[in-house]
Length: 472
Image (cartoon, rainbow, N blue to C red):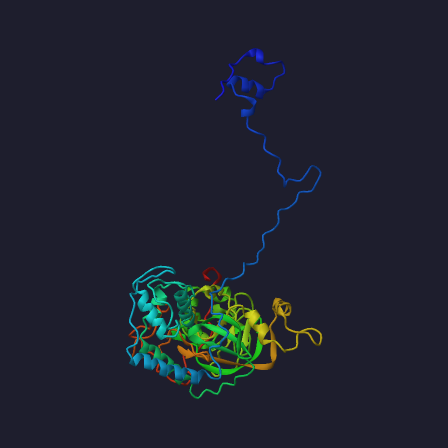
């Protein structure tokens, strides 16, 4: 470090600045002085108007939904019943021959890792057809075996990672006899089906929590969905989609007035106002909630209707499909549920992610809102919703739709697919097949009896959204 020169009054000239005096007194050099801050590049030049910083967009970032299979083969097709019945026979043969062993529940094998349990894993995947019988044998989770694991995961609705972890082990450990029972029970539920397969149709396999738009025998689009919780199950339905409603109102069913509205109002008298729900009498005239005795159930004598808007429980779109259960598909303000792998949270209706894209597919062939020859494209759909006014659009050609409950099913390519028995319909007396993604029904709660007829759950309607401050 260079030595500083001692202070010398001779070093100061007349008119020296205060800074020069300070530097001499402290022995500091001019280069040690703090630099002057650089002028702000964003500051306006003298005589120019100030430039306002760009405003942040209020639009939410795109929602990243849960990953679902990209398999082009639909869950339900004209041959599903027979394919599943034949697959049940094949699995019966596997079970009768002793099935497969189990792996340690806490086992984790990463791709490329060496493990003694790999031999058992190979045997299992050969039995299920995921791995060729003549595949090279080793105790390493090599590339060939990783591909087989991914195929197994895809067939079970699991993330296709190739990593053998908790959920994959749980699925591998379900006995062959249980898998055979899932296939047989699912085939029984399809028995007697008169579903009108057409060139275009929609299918939702309830245990998969997805909606498939099928065109010419191939899945054109598969959407993440939220289906009914076990205590408010989504029923099996075969019907047709006839109308699309933009900015729908929602009439609260009596069952939810009793279960949800009245308890909310007892705790928070302002709940209806927060949720933009109006009370109407028999003449359609509005009634003030303060005039109702909420300690009773007299509110069921009134119509409770939620205004259109972002907070509406149906969101911005409702998809009408006439059926005796009053079930339909719709948008939702609670879109965070679409990011989850486990999506059994509704009161029976089916909420669809990216519903505007789905609506665009449904409206193909339906005349658009503008001049003759116009269509319902993304801009027309957004514009129709942006008005805030209710608009009902009748499909030029109704689209067949089926809600099915298939915990085991086979596709024409010879693959067997399995999903968790979330409603406990396969065999209530036996242990529920699960991969650990969904808790099995409690033992004390009697499970509904298995039937090929559509189950009749509690009245299934969309659950009330929580007040804005409580939304997920």
